[in-house]
Image 1 (cartoon, rainbow, N blue to C red):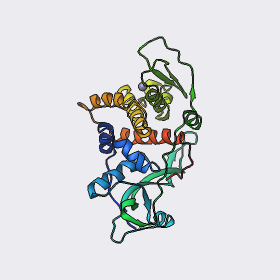
Image 2 (image 1 turned 90 degrees about the vertical axis):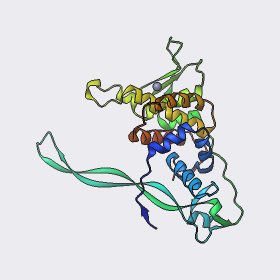
Image 3 (image 1 turned 180 degrees about the vertical axis):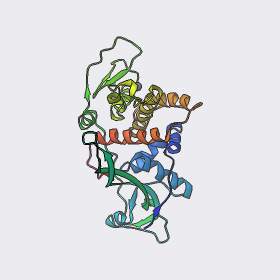
Image 4 (image 1 turned 60 degrees about the vertical axis):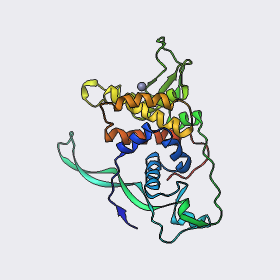
Length: 271
Ligand SMILES: [Zn+2]
């Protein structure tokens, strides 16, 4: 099996996902066991190659379900994280010496190991049901508390502080607002807020809002909850004259995955 050197641009996948209604919900319904980025990668490859989108699995996965990959079928490429440790030189301020330290890293590699249902034959396929998403489970797993809303400004729908979120009872789209505020926490925006703003470490406000709104859209659309259209309007106005930075696109996918996974009720194998 080969490792490909393709490097998909996450910002491009994100652009498609947030501007084309239905892209995310379709990808989620087919490939919900995979990360959002991989769901979109799989969908794009199915379109490109004229394959009927459907559940995906490795050669061995299909074999275990009594199906087999048809001869000559070409595998789909997905992205896999590889974690490891490497050594680095680090200056120790206390001793004034350079020291060798071990640092963890995550690298992403692209592997072509996956086949879509329509590339296989054999025993009848039993579709997996979509996992449920539960708010209290998500809050607990993420270590976030939902606190009473205390803001007199009628235009404010919700807010996030440290590891707390508050949603107005008058919020137009309470689910979308919850995802938006959770995103601020998961993306580290609320933790950054405590840092000295002169440190230059802080994400600019407009990027913070864009990131949170994209996460809200990805979560709402994945779970079929209302609110995606409102987010889409906001994000589309951002695209008039701006691009979403690649770094933000990655962070957005990562945060949406974390929130979706945290609230997942049925046990699923993390892939
Ligand atoms: Zn916000």
